[in-house]
Image 1 (cartoon, rainbow, N blue to C red):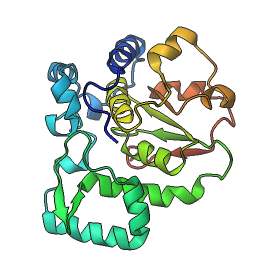
Image 2 (cartoon, one colour):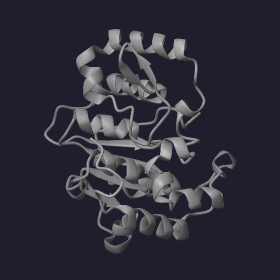
Image 3 (cartoon, one colour):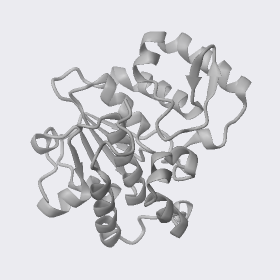
Image 4 (tube, rainbow, N blue to C red):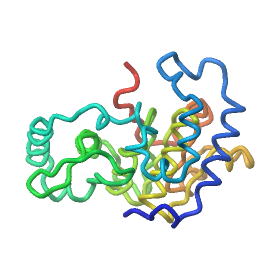
Length: 235
């Protein structure tokens, strides 16, 4: 679902968390590869139209393979192979090719987003490793714009999804999560900064999503999570 540009009130939380995390950012958190968040990025982030269309406006430029892949035949071939592997029911349950207005293709009357295909494949591979307990807690390190985390939440509705990333990326993740789950209860950095609540299993389980800067991984209590994921950011 897409709650729409004016249908949720997370904008203040997004920018409050970003500002506070930038103040607290420790030296060495940004590698040369991620020294990319210039003034134009923040201008777009604060423009409601650019944020709404974040996958077209350039805000997800470094987080999104759909920005670089445009070979329609290649995408169609990958789509058919993927559906054959995961099954149409799984595909339809987790596919999300529209939010953020990405570049898409029509394959056999199905709207297909190249980056979404990768995330569907990742979700299918990860699913067997998520324990069948009442409330699984899943951590993703380097979660992009939040696409995989959202898919895992669709597959495991009772799970808590923890997204750890740079503060600027957290802002986009927060926006994307709320577009998919408008009523989601999110622990964001500004909220955590105010309470400094323990990131143990009991407290984490109170939230649908926990979206925090990567350095707070040190605050996660031992044995508080079930699965930790990193797909492509730890080369």
